[in-house]
Image (cartoon, rainbow, N blue to C red; front, side):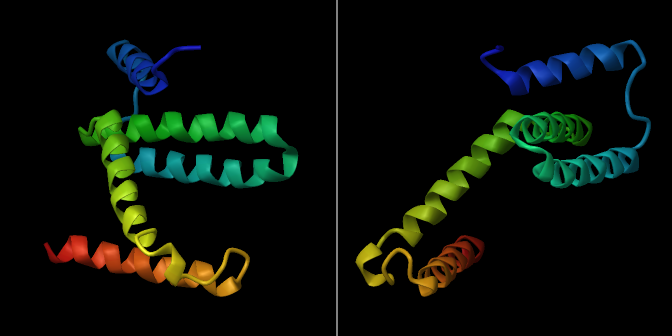
Length: 124
């Protein structure tokens, strides 16, 4: 297995595009992304192998969309990871102040903290 599947997906797509096998318009990519999302949802009822296959197709399509938007998919994912880590650190900043695990209120409390962290980032 390739150690860097995002980079490999991009390489394959660039190679195919150089030979003329590429999307013509951005709207085609949005439609394909929606199609892959639908297929993944349907695959859930079919088992984990099918889910893995369809999730792979969705991720491949996301890299393709990033390429067409002029965005580095790895940088975008790294940024999303960092953003999640920052926000989740805020969620976890006072775990004793949350309802116990298993209490249905806990998720709502955590979501409220998540939204606080999100607002704080937007206010900067």
